Amino acid sequence: MDVCEEIGKVRQLRSRQPGVSWGLVPTMGFLHEGHLSLVRLAHQQNDRVAATIFVNPAQFNDPKDLTAYPRDLERDLEMLERAGVDLVWTPTAATVYPAGYQTYVEVENISRRLEGASRPGHLKGVATVVTKLFNVLQPDRAYFGQKDAQQALVIGRLAADLNFDIEIVVGPTVREADGLAMSSRNANLSAAARPHAACLYKALTAARDAIVQGEGDAERVRARMSAVVAQTPGVTLDYASVADPQSLEEQTRITGRCLLSMAVYLDGVRLIDNLPVACE
Ligand code: AMP
Image (cartoon, rainbow, N blue to C red):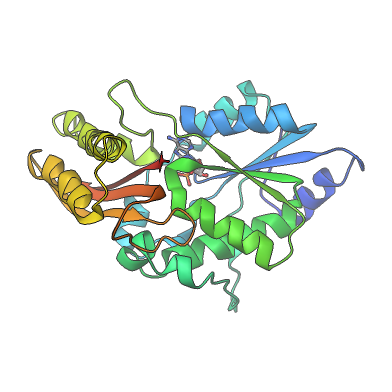
């Protein structure tokens, strides 16, 4: 496995074998089974797999959140090596955003809702760094998790709008036994708070079950999600959403497909999760 920091070296390694397909798995490190599931998917569909580890300052609207983000490069590299990754790019912030940097990518409408509304500038930071990763690594396919549903939509839109010749593949959310979606941020939950984090998935599945059983009023579904959170000690709701799965516009009546999504704070940690629902 090649590990490098410098852009020139990455480009050189990437272009070594023409005609060989590459899958890219971008990450912020502190890896878990969710990341590794994307690496496995990438291996199934490509000759070579590249991963990136970069805690992207541009997507953190809160400097304290950036500082608290968990990191363990040595462990991450061991995990990627064992998973058979061919190339890892671990750029520094100064490499990605050198002095004088002033170019940003913004996907307009779908970035304004949900995470975009709660974390101003977050999705602009994501779109910008992903554009740069695409330009440097030039993968044939790039892999993102359903866990960050809005991010995956934003990147799909970005790739289409900017004519990147890259297939965007979205892998399913990998969960802990109690339903909590795996996330690097879970490491920052105290042992006392950790069991309460299962309330997101409980709320989402309760909402899904209500819809499947015929509930068509989106506001009542939002209230159901909020109620599960309200019953859980220490958890504060940021949003509970029932939205169109493409435009992310909030729905009034649920007809056909919708995306249930939530964000909460627990123990000072922001947790998000979602569940796509189809009721035909
Ligand atoms: P992150 O390191 O949190 O930026 O995540 C890197 C990639 O892994 C993103 O595309 C995430 O959506 C994806 N990911 C994170 N957690 C999970 C999970 N539990 N299941 C599937 N994919 C995930």
